[in-house]
Length: 370
Image 1 (cartoon, rainbow, N blue to C red):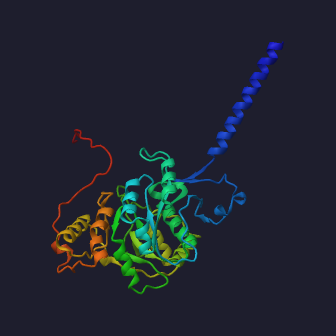
Image 2: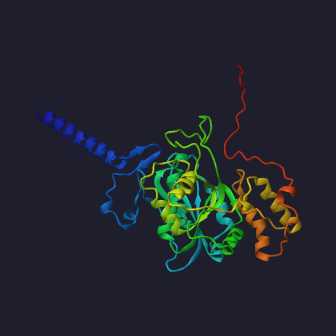
Image 3: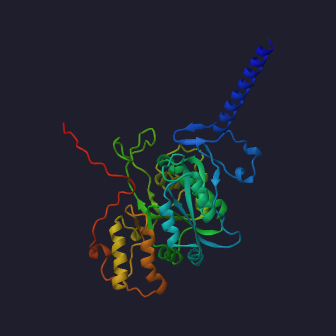
């Protein structure tokens, strides 16, 4: 009888431990998934500190900054806060941007970088602990509580605009760029200092009369349920554009009542901009779509001391090109000794086309033709 009671007690104790473990696991992992977005609605926001309370919903997401970059100095006018849309694992690219413009260089330019990230639990190269360490070392990471995914770029983009409008309201400009492009930052900031721009501001590479892609094989395939009209409103390339805190705030507020659309530059600088009646200012003359042109500029500066009219372009898969380009062009903006180019770059540039396939291993195999 005594042995039976001991067995019963042991069984009940074991059952209680199992139940506690299950409840603990359930509580810690309770999430609601909508598409590619992970919502953390088990959080009691009313009981959280102020840092949780100043974030409104973005569509179906109760946005929270898991990691927040350093706020812009209160009372100190900042010329530009630069929001860089960056993939979680792109440590090399972020490093190249920081090496091109370390803290002292940014102080001279009166600018600051903020890298925008989502969550990623399964990246084979970078873990969350590494991102937290990066954030601690540099103070320039802003990470939201949504999954790092291509179709979540609209959340990431809006998160950056919202953060800048709240935490950097004293900045004159908000610059949004992708981390896979190259920008001659001193020269583009000089342009902004010397041009008169409207208060309702969206300036960049203007795209007009663009039609939704209806072929399923296309990377930009959009269903009619996602977007019904035959033509997108005029918008700016998400590579690089310029706005300001006031306009950023109005764009974020315009989200209310809108349906989520995953092509972020089209949605934010097109659909939302049309809603709040913002006209676009053209900076297209400073763009190139060819990374080879950037390399020609680097060569011409080195050999001929000739300046470069191109200020923005793709890195062609070379994570270090941002650093190399700005280091080469630094000769011009630091000394002011570079000559003006006689002929346009597209008539003088002769460069080898370089294709960088990024990380990974090539696979060669036979393919049977039917």
